[in-house]
Amino acid sequence: MTTTYRSAPGKTVDVGGSTYSYRELGPEGGVPVIFLNHLAANLDNWDPRVVDGFAAQRHVIAIDYRGVGRSTSRARTAVDDMARDMIDVIRALGHQSVDLHGFSLGGMVSQAIVVLDPQLVRRLILTGTGPAGGTGIDRVTRISIIDILHGLVTFKDPKTYLFFTRTPRGKQAAAAFLDRLGERTDDRDAAVSLTTFRAQLKAIHGWGVRPPADLSTITIPVFIANGDADRMVPTVNSENLAARLPDSRLRIYPDAGHGGVFQFHDEFVREALEFLAR
Image (cartoon, rainbow, N blue to C red):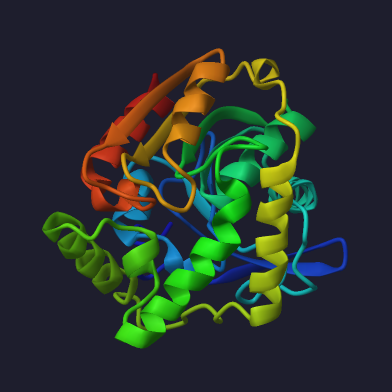
């Protein structure tokens, strides 16, 4: 199978009247790692250093939600509905047991998957995310729009501000990350539409105002990682997840924001692979 995300071909699977796009790479066999992405992200928004790092040892499958990239149908407006879609896709691909890596919105969807289909997930990695009803999650819309406008004014990608600190180290990490996202030049994914962006914002807001869930029911091993200065999903939510999940480990990266796992991709990949192999 393809060994680099840059060259992994786009694939599709039809499930329940919708077509879902995905890419897979790494050695076949064993339990695959499913990558579920952030707000307004398509397949090209995964850091290739993270994907390739996982794929050096594991079968990796990155999937677009409904309405994202080349996936068809209208985007969902609720996290639980997104989770049901992903469960159907994973099973349609022939997998009865998977590990999940959910970043930001993907981490919310991943938590819902474990609750809805607990037999499906073996181990869980949650990055830059938080629990239902978590601190500040209901303000993601406001922060996102402000930094999108900031990006327009300064002619910079909004992820410069949303994912990284404004320290010299953070600025350098942002520039390097954005360069890596542009490494793939052929067969790139379609940009996310405004309609899908608004639907996903609604899903995140709904997650943010939900009553807190009983996370003690999630008994599988969980690895939680984030930067120490996450503005989008405040870092305290990662600490809260670690405190409430029975079998969890927490890693907080210094001078790092929402994209801490991309800034510290070498450390994150090493620690995540060790966790999955534990």
